[in-house]
Image (cartoon, rainbow, N blue to C red; front, side, top):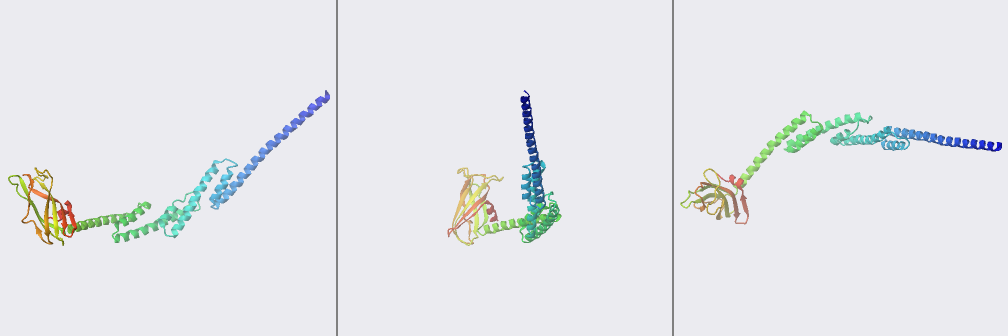
Length: 324
């Protein structure tokens, strides 16, 4: 029995020793892993910070991401996002400098404005260069606007000023120039409209001149004759001249023929009518309408066919240019 007890004691001691060894191994391994993870985390952070300070943001981001494998950290996640923002800010600053040197001041201004406040190395410089770019751009645009205005290209001048206003809407000089350009444009367009109208009048009068248009008193059957006296003012021989005419009563309301029930009458003069020749003094369209209330008539359209086959048409507005 004594031997058996001794064996049991030894067996218990052995088991206890094994448990202690296993515990030490497991605990020691865990402690070592924690130590190793902390060391790897710190090493990656050290590398990341070094690259960050030297503006190598892509490499810094990589080391920050590697550090997260060993320890989760919201601060490191923010720094990873900041690396992206700083890379963009760094590129915008350098791009702004390049554009500025090329005298592309507007795009340089826009690039400098994208430099973020977290970018301590470049932010103040970027603000100064943005202001300088804006000033140079505005001065260039003012010169271009004045040049365009001198060439009567007023819309270009207005566009120049409008672009400046996107940068500096409080610039009094720019506001004044834009206002002047708009006023000049309005005057210029008015002159163009007057010129276009005069050209249209001259063109119409180079085709025909209507001396008079009138209607006769209604006859006993309420028939009303139409008289049109006109001169061929073109340099061509007229083959046919067709007149579309609308009748009116004494209060200015349009009328129609009570028999044919047509709102207008189309009368044709047959040539040849030579250049400078007048037609209509001894001619008329008998009973153009049957309506006792008709007292006057108005030409809505004139269609001319010349002996050489060419044609000319005057619409209602153009007809007014050829009347006395």
